Length: 287
Image (cartoon, rainbow, N blue to C red; front, side, top):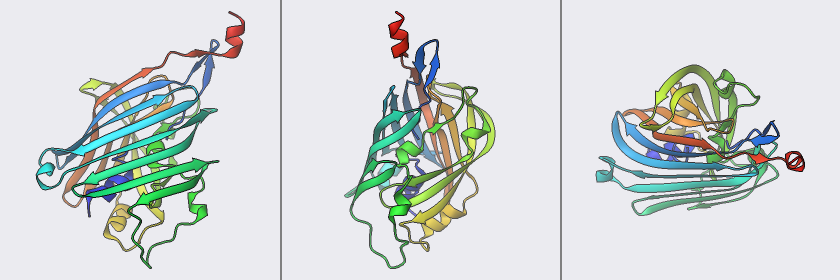
């Protein structure tokens, strides 16, 4: 089992990423805008093997999320790799509408490129290079599989509905339908507990801890060891922390058991700030 598909399937590498923004009107102003600059370290059995950064910019009517990562430490002795993912779309009524997603992974002399285009809440078109290897055992992808699907970046940002506290079980209670350009799969999140974290720089506070369960839907070969291993896991976790100025909860930490120890992606830096609120049209008329 290699690290590339493991990270891609769980959304830990590109994002590591559901942009959704709740537009609340308070005293004539709109509050649903914020920025996040985060840095992450990836460890395996406690040994650092990678690092990355993640920036998210949520504006009143659009969002952009960008993640970059590379191998580091001892792993660079055996293999080198780097990757990046970008998602962009509009925000309407507090809901994300992804328009494009792109992912690029380069490891030694091999590369993996994915582009996904969305329209009307469905995947309109997608490109994967190199193409998925044909196999008679592969579960075929259908148009129905791509309706309502989210890209891995957008799916990794969680909107909590309502206007109260975001540190609630409802942050976890959902199933994320993800299409990564090759596979369609579900990640079911279930509330596990509340915890506390303190970054080296940035956020100190409460996080919502979710259990994560992987279910392949289409585009996969059921007998593959990676697929079977992930589907059998019952100890995967995702820790969610808030982006200031929004009702978004995003991954602060993610963990997956592997045959050679626990794999963990955790934020070392998690700095988020609210954007200045924009006045509404009605508010401007009264000024």
